[in-house]
Length: 278
Image 1 (cartoon, rainbow, N blue to C red):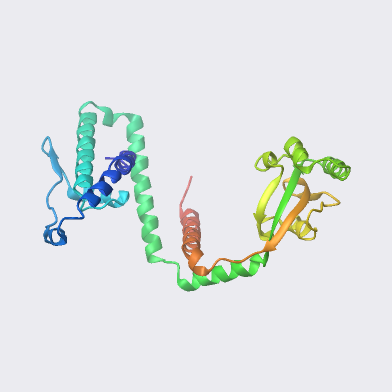
Image 2 (tube, rainbow, N blue to C red; image 1 turned 90 degrees about the vertical axis):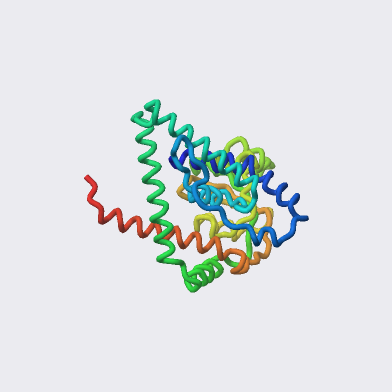
């Protein structure tokens, strides 16, 4: 069973079996708790298909991936049925020669490599965990760089300084910022919202953009175009409010994930530099 098939099994199981699992748990609330304690874990293969045993470890792996409760009979039944179906189809694929198809062989090899790569990366992170001190340091750095205020701004992005200057003149003559943004802005992510950038910290923008924005009074427009690597901006400040930085407990998991990814990226960079690639 390759990774693609396993993922398909997982999706099917999650979509079809988990609601049944919840219903079964609700229906069994009246059963004595001692019965569950006395139940012995099943052993041996999940099933045997045409003489081929399906190991119980495969079912346990599928259950872990789905997050379903292993002690639920309906979930166990769904897992067994899915694994039986996969075994039947795999046997037929082998018998019919599908398994020897060049494209199938390539997919199997890619799946094998992906599983190995994921396992290696998981093992690397377990052996090189992100420490609480690393998380605290990253948190303190982010907090220090965030400032105490966030800004709600709009902008119109154009290609040339001449276009930006004309927009500023048009707006000062009474032109509607929102309409001009929808008609002329090159920023496809904000133009339909009239150039609305929403609430954000200055640190989320290029420095030259942020510096121009924070100098504005509420409702005011930049007198001159602001140039960034994207082009020329006309900026209007809508509002300013105090920013409360989230507590460490709220963002700890996110920081750990980011630092883990950073570790993996650095490790991968090192492995690549050592590899002989022709």
